[in-house]
Image (tube, rainbow, N blue to C red; front, side, top):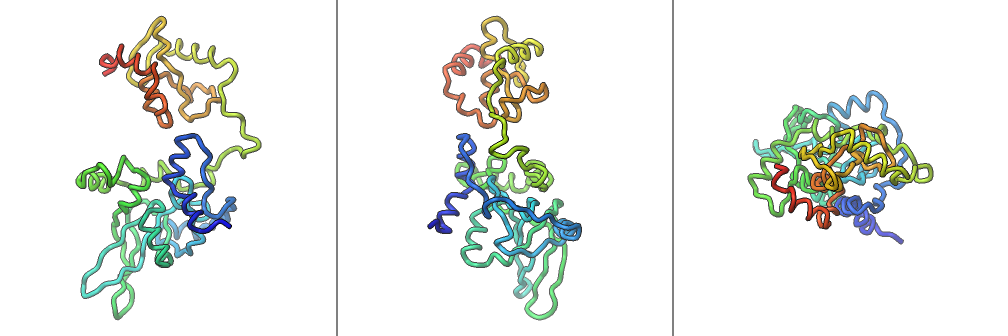
Length: 289
């Protein structure tokens, strides 16, 4: 029998990130197979304004660590803030399943949260006085630093990063950029194929001819550092697939990169220790700047 703790371990976003880098299969998101009940117009409006109260079982943790609610990527925050003798502490909003949310869930305090898709950084907060009615207001809230650490947002880390730099990353965080990287609408970004119908992600048989043609058409020049290579040195030029799909030969999906620039692309760190990269940097390293 699989325990909840084991499920949490398998779903850990950091482990999924490592799986992704290793091209290994990601652990499934909470809730098993995705079955989405679409939100009506009123619910979508509420998500974008005052937020919606949720139960823990209604929130999914996606494989990238972000949070979703019925097909929409969402933010979580505490709406009701207690005031004690004019002292109050505004909550932070959450963009991923971080250490704070894990602690709150274990303390059975998850029901204090609401979900929202508002992207102007302002959230409806109810000031809960000891006696009297709640006083609602729109407040500018800060993002949770544990969330930034969980997503490694702009390199954010509690290890090896100064407090001032962490503060700089946090203050520079804006939700429009977050939702650009992690789109709100999860339905529109669901995979086109399932596991049975997806074409094999491998180079076409004539890839050698295709890549040579692309390099020639683009002047044997790296589109990253702009270094030009000729003759036998063109072996240090690669044709890179921007979307990672090796079976795609669409011109807009291909870019010509030197081996050094290629190694800096996401999911290409395995190239760092190759003999080819070492040789190239010895020959051209200083001429690429």
